[in-house]
Image (cartoon, rainbow, N blue to C red; front, side, top):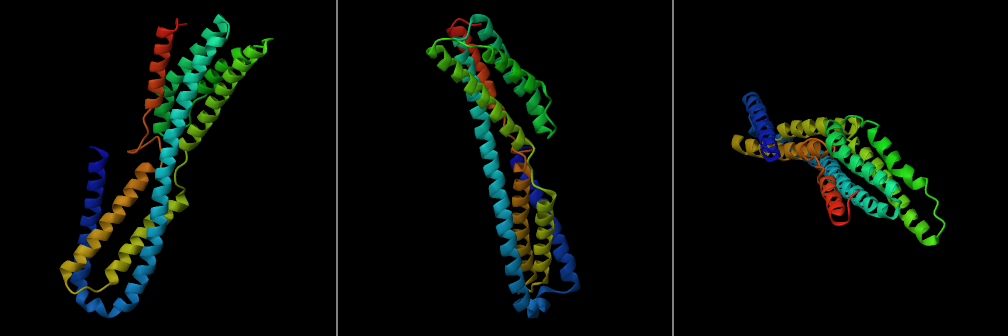
Length: 261
């Protein structure tokens, strides 16, 4: 089932449950008999819904922005990996091959292993760090005499350092979801909004079904979207390892067009 159908199904279930509760409440007390409470109830309803809408919208927008930022990080890291692969050509043959082997192994490890671990919101193993060390070791051992080679070697070191920084940012974002306190605000807050709606009187029974159903459905959709976007590399809004797969294709093209390893 696609995420669209999941969201629609969840919203319809919430609306159906809300309508059942409305029907039960109407059996106890028709909405027309509650119109006398509307002056106080409407003020309370407007205050609670405005505060809740502000919090929910802020959380949803923040989750979306975090997901976009995480996507940019993956492309930056993949781009730096390609640059390291290119720049390794300035090293002696043995060191060049060692660096390129480490770059390729690191990228494949991210796609084949780390991505599944991030998708399951699990700690990432240390293999990636060891491959980063293998990438950095041949570069650190070089001490060229001429300034031109020193400049090129410095570029390689900077790119390896950029890969390391992007990796830490990616892994940090992968485990950063909403805190329990925030979910405590969002979920009970939605129930509070629903409870206040039930206290309001309406001219007809049908009108109360329509109002409660529409507001409940909208809140359900926003909560569903927040849940799916909470972790950028997991759930329905998960980022795919497209950037790294493209980087591997670039490695193959570099080897094919420029002499290989």
